[in-house]
Image (cartoon, rainbow, N blue to C red; front, side):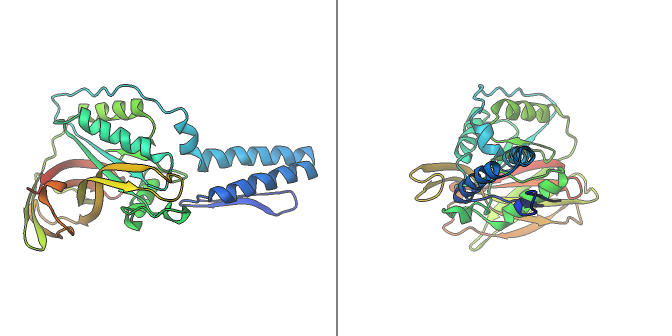
Length: 302
């Protein structure tokens, strides 16, 4: 989808092309001053057009920041069931985004509150904030591509951070603990018959993974996420300048495999400075057409 809006003289106000467009704060400020001057120079019709365009701009591109001011802090309430349901919680975040630290903290809190439940957490650090003053040490274009894949699967107009996605089918802004708790509860209530098992064996330079599933469905892939359990950064520039950020469940690598059998072995690279207690593997089988996740499990490396 391409979107643009223009002044009556034909000069562009701003443009949006499918994917993500985030303007630096400096450009946004200049844009606002430019709007004021144009409003004074043009007719009432131009004023109304600019106001409507501005509302669209704020809704699409400043969406996370606006919602953060209304961030809900309801107590986490997750109810378990006997349906063998699961919830895989994917968070798209960035150290360069001022709205993201509360979402990171929310995920860490939820992980503590639901320990022992069939809930799996993955935090992807996207790289499109890196050009705005601070490069996230955990960011990768690979994770931006994954978020863009969800944009296609879920028919979303824009990508934004922070964003939660549950089981590949439900998404919402990262401020909303009430919605997060409800979607996880709904996922846990869903009866599951699909199974996935992973057993990991670290070697000198690699990790061998034995997988086993009870079925191989059409248009699906097995994804293996290599996860660093905790991380910390002292941000020196950008929107979070001066803050020390704590992270959990940081996805460092995501590999996908087309399964030709219900059982087999895979090999992935061992992370640098590997310490078994600091790392975890999470595997899940996902439909490559719809994004729906059918089954998931984890494997510790110690």
